[in-house]
Image (cartoon, rainbow, N blue to C red; front, side):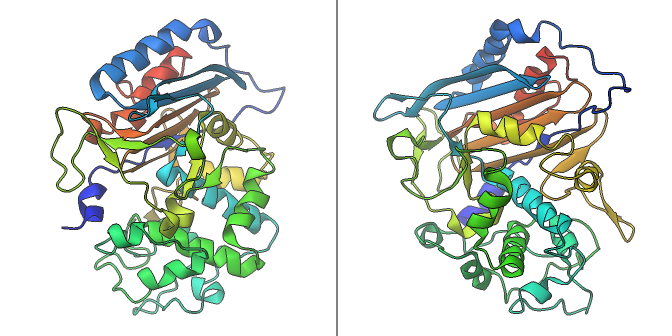
Length: 388
């Protein structure tokens, strides 16, 4: 079995966010109880969690009411060199990158530079049509309703050693592969990082601008997200956190004595689906920008917060985010070997939580790190500020 297939069981994608009250006539949420002075409570939660998972390093950020109320990092960015982690260090954010791609897609749709309901072949002619003849549109790709497969045996050491300079170079990895059986377009959701890379190709084609520059122009520069960069071996230099795993990378049995160092792999084959690094400060800013018109217009904001139903099929993802209810929120998170990342924004409480780790910690298969429920790390941190 390939590394990708075994690792897929360890990948969790959970993250939440929600809009903000914008009218003076509307009641505003009560201020979070003692949230700004709750550093000790936040630290107790992180310390208890780290006592179990023993991640090499963890970085945590919390904002409430538009203010950052907690930011702290603990552990080592590099165990071998004993380099302490710093709060402003940028970690891999894995599939949180899909939210950046989805937001950039909405920005293009707002100005008419791309049509969400055009078939992807209009923008990427080299991609084949579905054998059933059903159209595969950009909207279906953004909602994981297009029947594209996820990673397979191709994600091996040779792929991790290869540099993809142009997002179009990713296409041969999956272009000629069979479509997923019993998941014809509009059949049911099927998670696919290749689907989001195909979106990136369409965006590049529609604008004539390389995808990395497009993301900078549409999202990173307007929000001043200076830590967000495309991941590549050596990016960040000595300040780049190394990655570790308490699971053996060959067969994924638990390690008992010490974590294993993860090679400095190249993730450019997942440019639009998981190829970014960021620090917690910039994730907090990005998450809060999803709550109300500003970076996005009101139509796009509504699209983000609405769990989409397309021709009778309900999707789980909407433009890179998972909209959820009770309480209203968006979610996205991610995991690669040696990476755990989560971002959550609660609507009524106006709370944002970002968590990053440079490890697959002990017991991290549980997804507790990115879980926003009452027993998860994200959920427990948010509860300090009244988000439940």
